[in-house]
Image 1 (tube, rainbow, N blue to C red):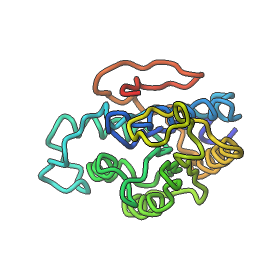
Image 2: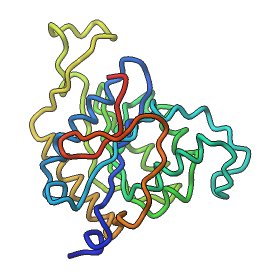
Image 3: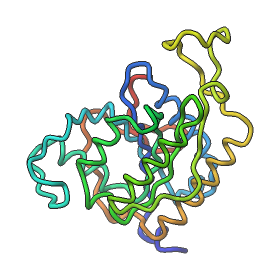
Image 4: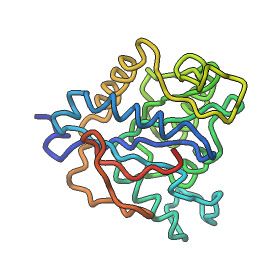
Amino acid sequence: MNSAQKNGPVVVGLVVGSSRPGRRGPAVAGWVAEVAAGHPAVRTGAAIVELIDLAEQRLPMLDEPVPARFGDYRHDHTRRWSAVVAACDAFIIVTPEYNRSVPAVLKNGIDYLDAEWRGKSAGVLCYGVNGGGQAVEHLRTILAEVGMTVVPNHVELGLFTDFEWPGDDLSDPTAIARIAPGEGRAAALTAMLTDLLAAAGGRGSGDRPEPERAGGGVGEVAGWAVAPVAGR
């Protein structure tokens, strides 16, 4: 039995890194949870996930007067966000690619904190017209700056290859597409989760208190403890 099992399950924060109305992030995160539910670590209770929807956190643009590195948080919304992130041992970040980078809401959420990220691991899943590889590389740089280890493998979903569009009409940018990942995507995600849990090592969270959450309770989806998702 490793130290993570002794101390409690490894808590993986599944971050939905977009807030735009009509966003596809919650649907992608739902697929991530579905695939991950079959992972041996999840089936045995050695790992669980907390769904963290940045749209639900409702963080304003960074408004702390003191740099995050000092941990001197003046606002309640920052303290709530700090508790959510501190309660996780590792993260899967689901992000679209916006103009070769990540959404402002995701960068803003990262910038609010410092110590809560350090020493933890992350895996990245990006989706975009061509899969979002440049956003992944930019995010790697950002996460490294706050002391995180990003696992080498990541997952990319293409909007025209891994989603199904109503009536196959790709001309309407507001159309709601159904996620339909192509061959090999689930295997790639499973491999990334395996690498992420290995990188998390003994960071079991059983001896830490539950985080304070802004709004909503905790539900159960496919055996994963998740916070509510809105805006699907």
